[in-house]
Image 1 (cartoon, helix red, strand yellow):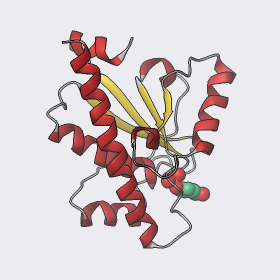
Image 2 (cartoon, helix red, strand yellow):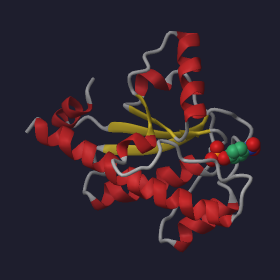
Image 3 (cartoon, helix red, strand yellow):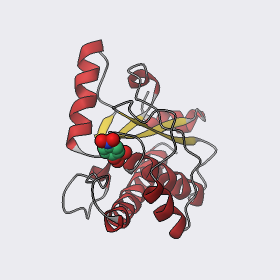
Length: 172
Ligand code: 4NP
C-alpha cells in the first residue's frame, strides 16, 4: 500500500535502514531518522528499525565508534544487530540501503524469493544535495569517517521526512 494511503488510514509506516553489518551505518541512520521523525511529530505513525544484509554481528551492540559519534552529537540508540529477513520485503514500507552493494544484495535476496523490490531505495537518493548516492562504509577507517557518515545520514533523514510530509500533504 502506498505510504500516503497508510498515513490517511493511520496505519503505521515502517522504515528500515540497511547496511552490511548493522553495526555502523544503518544503526546511525536509524537513530538519526527516528530523532528527525520525532521532531517532525510523526512518531505515532512512522517507525524506524535497521538490519544488515550479513548476520556476522547479529545480537551485538553497535560499533563503539558509531555509538560515540551518535552520543557526541546528541543522538541515542539502544541496539542489537540483526540480519535482514526476506519476509520484510512485503512487511516494511521503505527499505533504505546505505550503498550500492547493500542495494544489490537486497535485490539479489528479493530475486531468490520472488519478492517485490519497489520499496527498496538508496538512502541518499532522498538527499537532493548529495554529491553521490552512497553512504561509504566507515568500518575500516578512522573516527572521522563516522562523523562524515553522521552528516550524510542527517541530510538524507531530512529528505525522508520531507518525502513523508509530501506524501501526507498530497492526500489531505
Ligand atoms: P556497516 O559496517 O555495514 O556500516 O555496519 C561494517 C561492519 C562490519 C563489517 C563491515 C562493515 N565487517 O566486515 O565485519
